[in-house]
Image 1 (cartoon, rainbow, N blue to C red):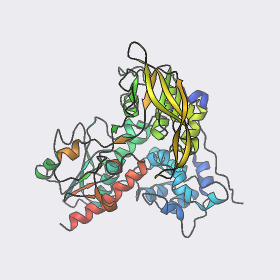
Image 2 (image 1 turned 90 degrees about the vertical axis):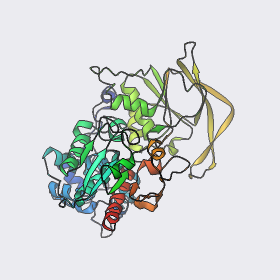
Image 3 (image 1 turned 180 degrees about the vertical axis):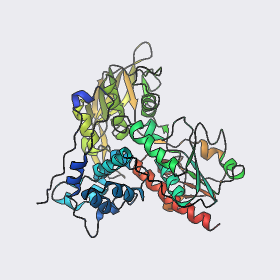
Image 4 (image 1 turned 45 degrees about the vertical axis):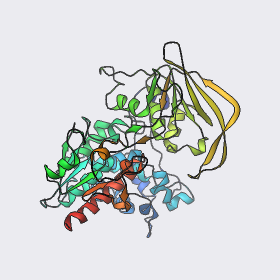
Length: 461
């Protein structure tokens, strides 16, 4: 009889994991994966595929898992995704593929994300070669940025036979996968590095410590390096602030800086000379995945953490799974609260966060109920650090140094439709550089669509 409940996933005990940076979720073993795959109805019109931004043939790969044909399952996923181990861990499946699953109407959807993760991990552990590609066609493409959009674009182009060079301004490859998402959600050596190595096996070249607009310009890539097209996937790494009193105090961080110092610069490891001051009590302002990541990281560094968000729990944009894990780890939620001032001591250090209580009014343009301040409701949260996580914007360096590249009022590159074509011939863009901060999988989708458009452009020019 078909079970309406998914096979549970084993996890670290919350009381243990909040003191370490090891991965929270253990994932499925072979037996568990086969049992979970057997729940799939193999629908004739699979809605799960339409819910996947990179269009993985989900029923086909799951059918292979059901039959213990794990290598074949990996090959199916590789047709559409260059980063299955990443997506299986951080993709919001509950609102995408799993949200479309028919089983979810009467019970629990098939655990598509956990099965993708299993296949990716199994193929890595068994050294499965997924580097099948077309012969070199004599054309080269430059990719700016090594985040999920850039890597996806590079992978698809390499499979088509293009020579691809990825330019990264930091010393490590991976973009937000390396500096943004914590180790306990996405292990770097275990998952990110091997998937980047798979791209290298496809022939993708990587150039680090190259700042486009400073070290070399976009025009140089065309005129001196001879690339036929360029894809810009430089992300959105410039943090936004609230412009409230006290943001320049010691002990105030952007979530970008905080997570970069912990993840990329290994501030959580005692043997590294790159510590970060966290404080005994930390307020994290925001409600997205980045805010939750920052709060859970602060807990692991020994702080008591408070998540300050101006709407209710129902409106939290973070993934439900991550919110649940944060609750288990002891995160304090200060919902319906809006910060209005960061309070200092007499030595310019943070000593508190002044907030207003809020209530929800009518829906705004996003469809969520608008938070409205309650009169005379000020209160103070005693903290000695504040992490601000209210969004990011693209770095203006590339657009300001490149002629003919149109951007909007938010600094995002303007494209013509979903294929990533910009206002300048031969230049394509996608991911957060175009949309502003979004999810890993949407950035990957943009990279894939741009790769297809780049191929069509080069073939016709």
